[in-house]
Image 1 (cartoon, rainbow, N blue to C red):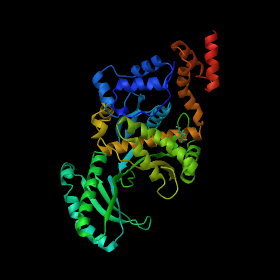
Image 2: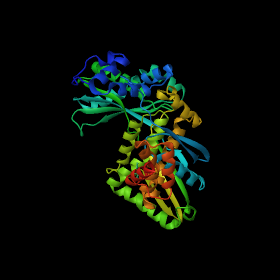
Image 3: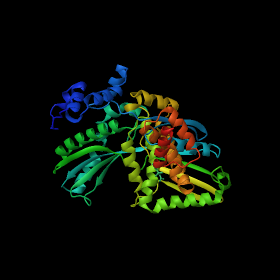
Image 4: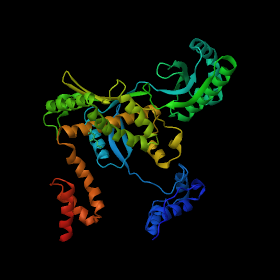
Length: 438
Ligand code: MEV
């Protein structure tokens, strides 16, 4: 099969879906038939549903599936939830479920939203006198707000809108650099479109008024929301008397509590550990964020910035032992939405939100932070007791068996075998060989 040498292509976006696929097959695949079948196998047979997915993004050729799992038994502020999780990594959902069950018997999770403020900025340069700029800003501020009325009307009716606009002098960091730093309340919406539309209107008004009123030019560089939202904070916590930690795998609760706290303290002071510790937290957070149609890249960026807020990357969770009480908590910024965006478009997102009993954005902040805390509890518990591999490899067993295309019968025998044997990649390969020899 002759492949054409990959060359740049112009007008790709104008091609139809099947023309795009044919171009890809011609350019990159030696077995076109297999590649075409694969692409088509992942299409949804319901044309309307497929079209919906095609139109989420650009140049769609097929669907990329992620499993949607659920973790039941989460008690959050005494209400029971089953949490939807979209994730490809084995053992994450099992760990969340296990942590949920563990804390269900010990008072459950408590969560509270501390604040809900979002941020956006108009970045601009100005080389004139600062006092003149400041007094111009103060005089034009009411008009900045007035000119966004068409955008803010509905949000204001529901109780949200623009909270404030400040002028920030950033010239010590960068020559001639200033900002309009605006804060917003966007209620149940994540608010990106609302904030960006307001900011672009601020920029327009600001520029036009500056031209009329200021001697020196204002040059708008860009207007965009910030995904760093340190004042959109949620806190989730679990606590219980140390003796209540006793369970099948925690035979010495005081030792467990001390070692667990030590592990969290290490993540607080040691960035190399903190990154992995927080990665485990994000296993839980991203999975729920994705399942509920929110932007996990925005959440990731904001959360990791928050983890470095004191100048050194650190743990997002904390632990204390006081008066024989074990307490473990997380405090993170989460700008989430339960209306707008994918929430009303993606059928599985609607399904996930219905499963969570149509949460407000504040409810979802609590649920997501709890998923992160539960995940971290499970990981640190394993790490400080059995080690992570025992549970992880058990869950990973099915992936290895699928890699070797094991039949249901082979799987059954091998899973039985590993109930009493340590799972390693080579041990599984050996077990497959043995089963196939028989
Ligand atoms: C693996 O996805 C996540 C962990 O590495 C997290 C941790 O080390 O705390 C297990």
